[in-house]
Image (cartoon, rainbow, N blue to C red):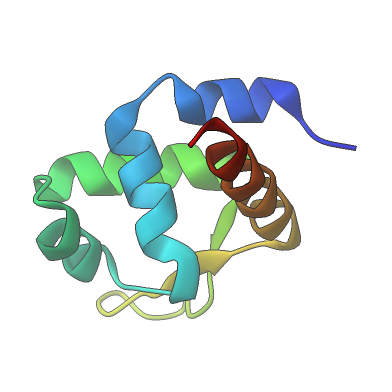
Length: 90
């Protein structure tokens, strides 16, 4: 079963989607910032929102610098739903 509230939250912001898609294979916020062209402060805020939605998690939270964020199981499920949705709308 999908979480439509979460999907709606992702779809409501182009930048949030950019950050979410960028984290597909695990990245540091600085890498996401470079890849998306978004300010690091915006990327950090969006990663926090994605964490609160249960879509991503920090895999090395004991570090102060160099933290890497990856999809959770829920994040992977939502990614697949969005991927199918994008294919059917093309």
